[in-house]
Length: 512
Image (tube, rainbow, N blue to C red):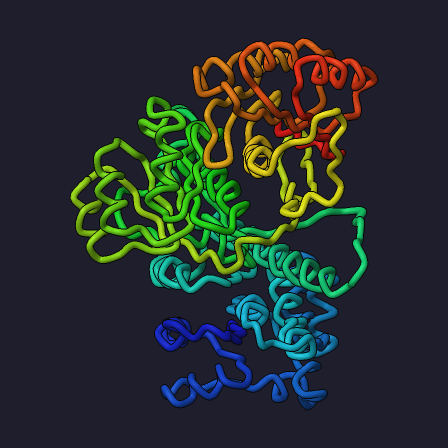
């Protein structure tokens, strides 16, 4: 008689699956809660103890780790030496394995979970059986996903056995599962170590969230994967209230916009297009903040994303409804606001939990043949403790507020980056230029007459004094930059010549 071993934490459709196996004259070995469920359904089963002659012990930690189990899984039916060994040691082949694992991910997702509780949810026997069965997929069918029950049953009923192609597919699924399971455990245990740990190998796992219509362009296929431990302040966790599904570019832009808005404590609004902010505004109210973000660049906002850090009111919704926008992101929408915005068929509305917004962590980007991993560029610079005034003239209080706002903004603009603004909003943004003075000219041109008496922020130092001179000639009154160039003094001298206040931060914000 052919044997199947069934031990599942997810018991969805397990009774129907087991009944189908019994109809094929397959004997079932089972354990614990699974055995109880099957027997209550009238399905006869053998216990692990009946097979091994060895009792379960150590609170279930030692149960299936036995030669009579793993020999039945790993023994090759095409090798006489294996068959002889199985006969000599009374090992019965196991041709079907249906196992899913302890819910480690779900356990550590609960804030109250202790380290000891998490450790007890690290499955040892389950992955061991799955890996053994998957290695021997030439003859063993291994199932880890309830969605695969129907295909296995169909092939058994039609052919009396599964196809090799199906067994190969299911085996690959096993190793994807166990790799992801181990990666999550490794990540969790690494986080328990207080000091920063640099690993010789870097493993992360992600769960499929969405198959996208296409990628950056229509000829590129793409999918969206979600970290099993994603922060609640993330696009992966955002709740979509309205509109068609997000595209690849939508997701990237939305991520960029929420990274910016988390920089601000009071009412703030960010308008973003193609990964760069086109307007950032703050105010006494969220409506005032949006007005300033809109006024910063009323042209580029068309077809863009707006993110605000307070609930969208009916008044704000009315303003937003008058513009073509791809997405609006907020911590909430009033019912009246939803009534207004949901009339627009093409707009996407995302509700986001802002409670964990001011957190850093790691971020990664793929390159051909590898992966770059770094800390997020997240520094709380509200009090600017390391900043220094390097010119004869110091910024006024309002200029210092403006420098702080625009320093936060330039951090999120593609390098070379320049932002011109005041203490309420950005006014001009020069993004992604190959030389810094080019970015200065774009930002000042966009600001127009408003550049007079404004401030300017640069994500990196000025290699020459030409940027300072151009800024001065167009009315800029204060500049913030990291400093660090061998020609810093030339820029300082030029600022002094024009009566400009200049602040060095000692920290650059390249964004490639």
